[in-house]
Image 1 (cartoon, rainbow, N blue to C red):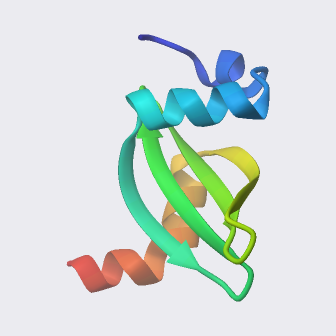
Image 2: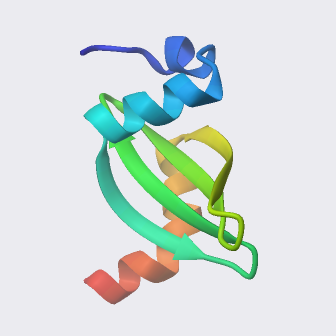
Length: 81
């Protein structure tokens, strides 16, 4: 299924999460004190799913540019290579 980032951004959160789980490819996970943040590649763009760790609930689903991915995940990427 082909969906642009603009079309994806207009979907309600429940449809975004279903779409990412069905068609996205998990890339990396990072954590902070409150959230588990899952990075997915979807078609030609990246998506982060922010989940509240203790509530086990999705807080937000955000589209990222490649530059934002590199900046946010630089530490994790250095460990992989």
